[in-house]
Amino acid sequence: MKIGVLALQGDFDAHRRRLEELGAEVVLVRKPEQLDEIDGLVLPGGESSTILRLLGEQGFQKLGEFVRSKPAFGTCAGAILLAAEVENPAQKGLCAIDITVRRNAYGRQIDSTIISGPIRLPGGPIEQVYIRAPRIERTGPGVEVLAERDGYAVLVRQGKKMAATFHPELSGDTRVHQEFLKLVKNGEGN
Image (cartoon, rainbow, N blue to C red; front, side, top):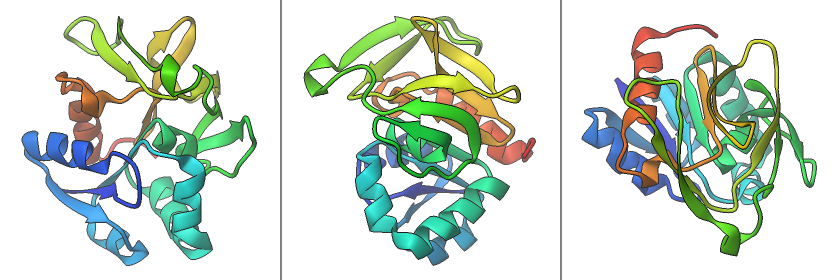
């Protein structure tokens, strides 16, 4: 099982380390053609508008084809990229998950925080690291909410896609990445 981590900008290396710790073979994806050699893709945090610029139109199209047909997991900026709608300000998304995301909804860098919150995966509460985090404002009917904060979804799954507004790669808890690897292994849903 080869898992790609989009390695254009942001904290992609923490995802690489976590996935390797869990036994996955990891490919740092920097060119569109590398998407052809992987089974699933992690889109890390960073700055979503910068990632869009670095992708370019051709890279964005290739990435869109990939995330609509294969397993993908986005954290923070990656969740923004996977969204159907993006607000504050509006920007294009890949429309891979039926969610509306509001960029920087929890405040500026100084407002970053770590909380412990409930999750609908075995093992009790999970540490949630928020850094200039987006907020999921709306979830479509096919979206399963796996964790919430203050009544808003912060971890969602739709078919073979997952998105988190927090950074599970910065926590010692491996359950979110394990759940994604299960999706890749089982090839569940769309």
